[in-house]
Length: 509
Image (cartoon, rainbow, N blue to C red; front, side, top):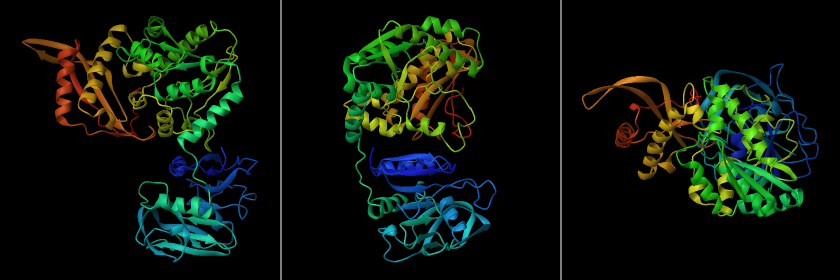
């Protein structure tokens, strides 16, 4: 990709948001740790320094080498970046009397500045820092202030260097995207040519060149990422792509056959492998969530490897890895603390001697969907909710049995079909049911029951990093609860999960 924007990561929780906002402007960008700046900067048209939880006054403050950037290419320094330029270039940064966090409004904007074109005084911005710039760096000119922060924005004369002490990338900065557009498009003159069509054309050409006449195997999951990856590869190499769809016995009700039928209608070369009994046998008696995930991962690789050996001369393994996975693995902080294992991260065992191809590794989830639409993939498939790789195993708390799987498949089916029939499915990012390891007393007819409890979960999110529970209509919850209890034998109580992420994760295990 040409005309890149380079974003340097200093460990801020907002770094991915900067990238998302830049991509929304149809500008391709990449995130690199501040201490691993690419040696070849020739394809980059601008650089953005992100925020950081560190203080520039601290001994552990990140120190980027900007010798090949500053004064040589357009530079926008955000929050920590703005303080870094001030602190080490003749200005002064000191601790604020009060932590400057949250909403603020611009009280002064220098007239005639392209950076603030289309932005009015009193525009809301989002502050997040405990330090503040008390004196500007050498040759700097103040561009904007808030009531509490005199140097909210500045530029350095003789350079195309701009700095702001607030976060334009967050939703609360109402004109933040406009400021990014002013800097990147009007000041840095970065072309806005990163579109789904351009991505497809360039990626198909790249795949043709890289793969040639080699054979590629891909594990399909029925989800958006692997499906879009498969269609892209199919467009590039056709029947040299061999797709394997494994039923681990933990899919949604009737999903194995339904998804297989859908793939065949798309012209993909797909083989379905029903290994449900093998997975459930290996999972028998296991209750620990991590052990369940790792068991499923191990058995999947064994099944996939068995099937791959039936194909001759396969040289590549394709994966539906997307950009958040890549960023996480190369972030400033390194791989984050393991909250739970992820099925698509971790590589291959040594005995699988295949090269990896990941056509979506530079895309965010919403971009994957847009590329899928460009490729003509059915909107219903592109709109599918994310579904965990370990399937229903991590929605059954405790050990796994075929009986529990069937109960949860039936409950999940009632819930998901209910969301669709009420026109709620597309308003929810992810929904599912959880089978709890408790029984409760109930009454059906004149008889006392002592049966299972299920929890329903529905969240709204952009990328799964954070999520809020969805306020589903009470009438809907009442109807779906009644339907579950009446139609699913073994369940007599339904509850609704109203916790957000964080602190709760979306899945219960």
